[in-house]
Image (tube, rainbow, N blue to C red; front, side, top):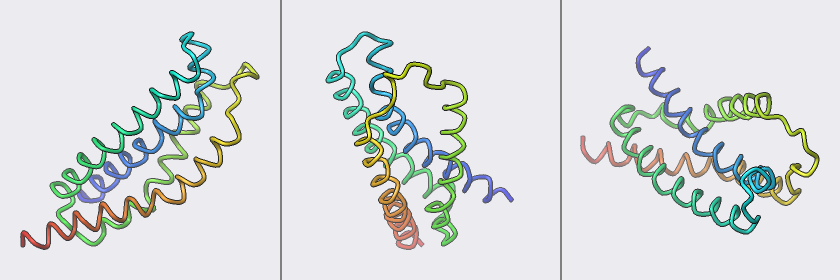
Length: 140
């Protein structure tokens, strides 16, 4: 049962790693309106945060999965388990912070980018999991 909770905790972190940059990308107009920053500045900061999130999150989740999950083949379930948590986080965020101003609606292009990221992200998780399992196999 302990492994089950650790697997779900790692899945939650994978979901957060996709959720935070996705929400930043979708809420560019809202962030710009509330902070008074230019849209270009918000886009640049979102890109910087995305790079930091991918780099630091990859390293953190690689070592966390290697330490907590011990290279088991069941780790590959993370490629599927992150999806319900992502939808849960999105629902909670949309419920707590609804769009009340029409100018805050996201750009249609950002939706296309999210769809592409949503399709590619499970392969990224599988790749990280594969390297974690392979590194654990070498140690044993």
